[in-house]
Length: 112
Image 1 (cartoon, rainbow, N blue to C red):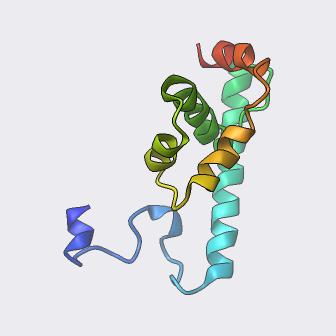
Image 2: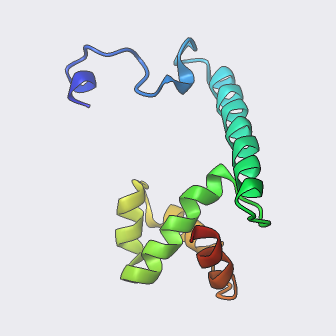
């Protein structure tokens, strides 16, 4: 990151947006959607190969560890900081998706 802090890097840290004007929000949104869709297709294929019948998405890959962290530390503020959110409400949205504890067994089974 020091490379970018010193102003020697490109406009983009991650190559997902390479070739797009940083001010073109529509193009950025389109690229993000395309790349997320591609990641989700690959995850679905990998889940099938692993015998996981549950829906697995790129977004779930961020939510699930957040839920596990919350279960371990029990502090939404720590989870929010870990995820790099600007406010705790964003982290709470992640956690709220997992309030049904019956999903815990499915989560553990999918992660092992």
